[in-house]
Length: 117
Length: 117
DNA sequence: CGCGTCCATCGTAGATAGCCGATTCCATGG
DNA sequence: CCATGGAATCGGCTATCTACGATGGACGCG
Image (cartoon, rainbow over all chains, first blue to last red; front, side, top):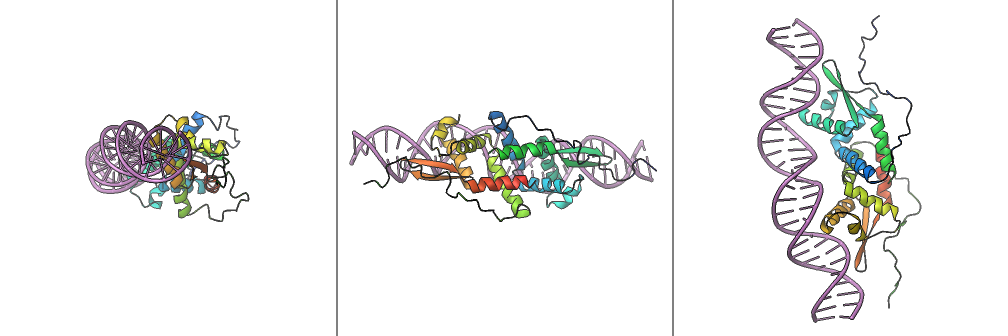
């Protein structure tokens, strides 16, 4: 049959199954800046909700996020942009839609930085 | 005369040596809100620096924080207020000075919430 | 008492964040 | 080709953040 005619979600849940140790330091002014940047991105309930959505579903949802949140489409799009700029999520064009998924590396990085406190 | 003339730092490093498990859930809309609030408080480099300072020194520093940061005293005071309102630090009056220290419970809570992502 | 120290708060100004409706962009489907 | 629908961006408004100097209150010392 066709190679894939199903809903292959464009951005897979695990493009890197083996976890690199992430050599960057968790302290120092650079790390402080990085932690502040990531924390700021997480520092809004809607964005936490989006992150949770994307973590929960291994697959990446697209505009379903808009339906899930009590916010206008444009507002959700802005929150997605913030998360994307922080490197916490990734968006890929999947045909007519856009597919978002978490960036596990950055999420792990955030956990490391918070854990270092 | 003076009950204690030693430099007892007013807020000890461990007022609760045994760690309660913290029964609150790490998911749900309440948890999302809580995580967003804490993350927002951490979402500034100066505040990350302050937290690091207070974690590093088990003892609580007071206005030394001002000397440590390249900011005006009033600005530092505001950052301290933000952290205090988030419950991440605690301030106690220690004679003529004010003594700040981290609130280990809240910090642990933050780690739990971030870890749940 | 009067002074100096330490810290919080006030007032202000500029920047940023959050929200929305309206518009634009763009890949598909007809 | 144009039409459609999902998504990003624009414009504008309000609210919050960040920073600072200045003011004010609490405390200990001389």
